[in-house]
Structure formats: C-alpha cells, structure tokens
Length: 263
Image (cartoon, rainbow, N blue to C red; front, side, top):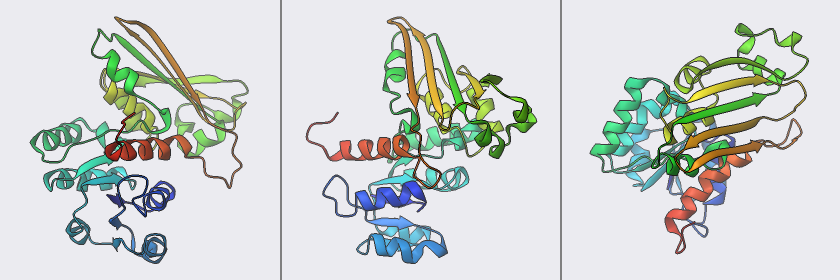
C-alpha cells in the first residue's frame, strides 16, 4: 500500500501497516520535505519521497490519501489511471460537482477504483444498503463545541459567544456545507456519497457549549423502515489524539482487503 500525507492519520497508518503483518504492507509514502526523516524512521524499508513519479514507481496497489482536498483533486484521478485503488479521506474534494464527476469518470475508466471509508461516522454501510430499498430522506446532524466552530469560521453564521445552550445555526445540503467548510466535515460528504447524494442529503449544524468533543447523528427513512445512528466523540485531553474513528475505519477497510474472512 501507499500513503499520501504524513500527519496524524497518515503516520498512524504507516506504523500499523509497516510490517504487513496485519494487512497490506506500507511500500511507499509521499510526504512534504520536512517530513522525510520522520517518515523514514517509522518505515525504513518503504520508499519515502516527495516526488509523485517516484511514489508511483513503488507500485502500490492501494493508496490511502491523508493529505488535503487539493492533493486528492490533483493526484486522485492520476492514481486511478495508474491502476491504484484509492481510499480518500479528504472528501471535501467532492464538494465541486465537476470534480466529483471527474473522479467518478476516472474510477469508471479504471483500472483503479475508489473505496470511500466511513471516517468519523464509523459506518456508512447502512446508508448504502438502504439506498437499494427506497431510501427517501437522509438528515445528518453535526455538533461541535463552540470553540471548534470558531476555528472553522462559523462566526459568519452565528455569534458563538452568545450561544449558551445547544443551538442549530445552519441547515443546508451536504454539498453546500462541504463548500462552506472546506477541509472539515468530511463525515457529511461521506454520508452524502453513501446515501442520496450530496445535493439531496440535508445537514444540520449545531453549536454546543456543553460538550468537548463532536457528535454526529444520521436519521434516514427507507422502505425497510427508519434508521437512526449516533456517534459521540470521547472526552480527550487537548494533547491527545482525537482521530480514533477516522483512522480505524481506514485500518478496517485496508485489513479487509487481505482478510480470509471479510467483515
């Protein structure tokens, strides 16, 4: 496998799959210049480089993108064309409908294919399954602490200093939310891709001064009946790693590719 990006998630994946004992072996890592030494220390046997052509020469069969929406938009179609399966985390690249169609076209042409991970939601399989049986409505509610909304630019929609109780401050489509908060809220895009699409998936954003971690809730209606799922974050200290569900959903997907019993 190859990994693009060596931040919190990319470095965790590199360590987990360094030996190949638990799934695909890390064979190549594409990093920024200042990350070369740290990445080489983690996986000394892998090709660690800053050059995309050198990365491709390592011939990864699957690539986990853990960098940015711009990186995914630039390199994703090239990876698919080169025959690499792509597991993208920066789903904000799909907010642009033309970019989404370009990706889907590249995946259809192959030989590589896109595999969308669940990310922080933990699972999106239930939405993909419901889509096969009269899925009619999907609403995604995302709640963050007010401090985090400030860092994401939500002050243009609500005076967060005046929010003393949980408050819904924006309702829009998944595509519009992805455009308004680039680089964030990949869970919204993932739910949209799995279910009714980005334009038909409704999103409610909640500022909650009573919490320290995010929570996500999906409510859906299909021919099989109503569906509700909620995922809460853990109360991690500021210096702890808050990415459990995101990183481990990718680990599960990659392990599944090599498992004799796929779950």
